[in-house]
Length: 232
Image 1 (cartoon, rainbow, N blue to C red):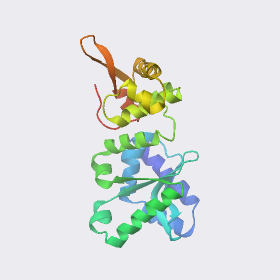
Image 2: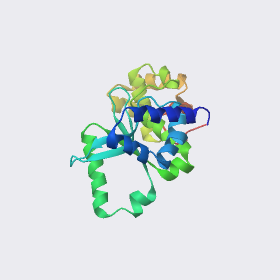
Image 3: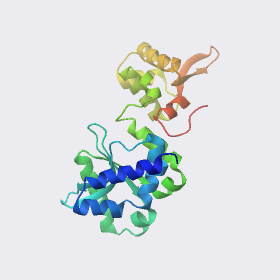
Image 4: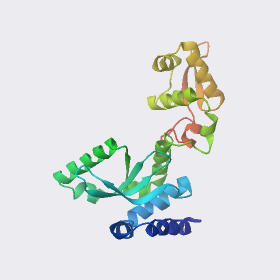
């Protein structure tokens, strides 16, 4: 992969240079196959750089014990912990207490302001494009995309589009009106504007071929709002 090896080596070296003791040792030991594969198969294709990404990031759990997350991504004020989980370690070899501890830790970290997301090793290794799409969709909540999302300059248009995506089916103007507390004419105006920009496609129904619904388009996938199949 062009540029990855050099960039990744510099990325790890820069973090090692800023760490001492167990934090340094943990990075040397813990940044192994799964973590490297995530960086190569998922993060690099999505971002092309490692800015604001911290490997083997130390946090404290609810007991005050140190815990090292695989990665922490900190764009601006957000703190997003990323874990890559193998089936054996996190399922077949986990007893009841370990399972409880993991759930308690994630809940505690959420209460401390961290967002925690996890990827299965099998997906990172064999279905990385799914991980890329899911991560793009998740991060779109916290940062602006350098691509198509720039067109969504109106805040309410962005929220209307997110609402349409969340339904997983065609959206009606009356549903938008109810959701955002506006009249139906205003809701239709927002939907038409999104359709004119290519984010939605009108669905014609009835003898008069009236526009009763709107569907999301592939442009929504490219911008990271959704990772599943939409209309062609």
